[in-house]
Image (cartoon, rainbow over all chains, first blue to last red; front, side):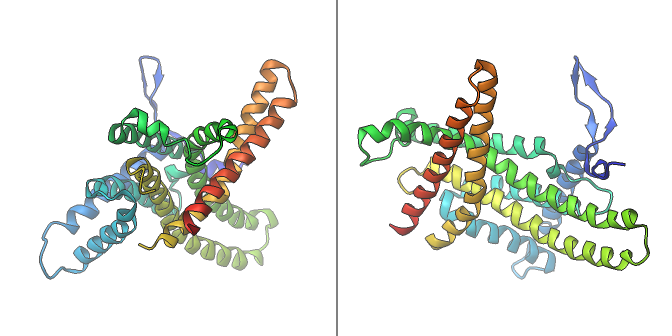
Amino acid sequence: MNIFSHISERIVVPLKIAGIDLSITNEILVMWIAIFCIILFFYFGSKKVSIVPNRFQNLVEMYVLTLWENIEPIVLNRAWLPFFCGLFSLILFCNLLGGIPGIVPPTVNINFTATLAVCIFLITQIVGIKQNGIRKYFLSFVPSNVPFGILIFIIPMEVLSQFIRPFSLSIRLFANIFAGHAVTLTIISLIFIFKSYWVIPGSLIGHLLISVFEIFVAFIQAFIFTFLSAFYIGSSLNLEKH
Amino acid sequence: MPKKDISLFEGVSLGIEIAASVFLLSFLGYKADRLFQTSPWLMVVGVVFGAAVGMWNVYKISVRKFK
């Protein structure tokens, strides 16, 4: 039996429209649940806003402000707050839902992380060109005070590093979450491999420790993805300052 | 936020960025080798260029941090 079948996608509702497979998988369902949780989280956090906040309002305010304090020095524009808050929340809630046994988070699927990373790549390019003009934006790939002979190598490297960014963004998030689930499954499956009661305590303690570490990883990876997205978008928005 | 803290998170990303650039370009080189029957030269170029791109990113961040 393949233990990774527990963290692979399964079709829940088969759906085909005009020959295109649009089947709803278990990961898509988890993503919808995560979106629903985010809506509830912010709805109840901002339902009865008061000057002296209650506990839940305090939590939501702290959540948004902590994120914004880290993102604001990079993008320098408050209009980006909802976008980055939404991105962070989506990844975080998806990761955290993966901690519930039996639930496969969409972040263990590279298609999900790659889609997010490609969106960030496109936004970076579009926003950079719109803000600075096409000429100034592409001239920013040419470093100053570099001899002409070296520029022949530097310019392709600069262009390539733009394309490598979405690749590394998607691999980082996918690999970290997938590895956590794979380690958890491996530790639990030791019980079935050795078929001994003596293995159970060690396996369960290992599983508990890895699960706690997974919660930490869920926060860190969501933050790193959001932070690096903000850095890429901020770099293309404010060419002089970065 | 101080500049060094921003570089801290950039530093976290650098390791994977170097690996990703080497992996991606060597993979593209491998595929191009199979297409043009030039094995293993385009893959070698991909590995060298991928490492160069990774190092260039490290250099850029180091310059930004220490200037």
